[in-house]
Amino acid sequence: MTIPCRVVGVTDGDTLTCLTEEKQQIKVRLAQIDAPEKAQPFGQRSKQALSDLVFQKDVVLEKETTDKYGRMVAKVLKDGKDVNLEMVRQGMAWVYDQYAHDREYFAIQQVAKSSRAGLWSDVDPVRPSDWRHGGGSASLQKASAAAPAVLAKASGKFSCNGKSYCREMTSCEEAQFYLNSCGVSRLDRDRDGVACETLCR
Image (cartoon, rainbow, N blue to C red; front, side, top):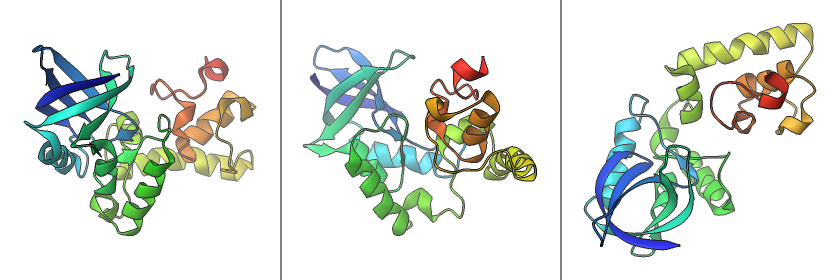
């Protein structure tokens, strides 16, 4: 499903408002990417980067789904160019591992990372999803992640050895360790800080 519209507002680096030819406003969440939160390092620059690309310009939306907030999740095309991918290329957004399905996004992110573009120039960039959970700075994130890691190391219970899915976890404790210490964000699909709901509820 494709929808031509004009971008009339940019909320942040991965959310915008589009006005269709029928004067219908659509709130759009850019698919496959996750931009820094406004209070995060590069949050404002990310918003500005998206504004520079699409604000007051005609675009085409390629709808993928609707999220739980009622926003259309879509690829945004400007003159045939993938705006979502361009945000990753500029280092102004992460690939959203949990929802990404296009391998090119990961390849472009690796290039941006290697060249230290945008947010990758930061010494220790924090994923927006992790920032939302911790609600604070990188140091806070590192402190919260370090605690279970130290505990696990001391007890010898768990280590980050490549598990990625809830079906691979043997307990809630292990799932939380992988979420908090190994950064496996896909274990927390609804982003409430609780890994693998079937194990931890």
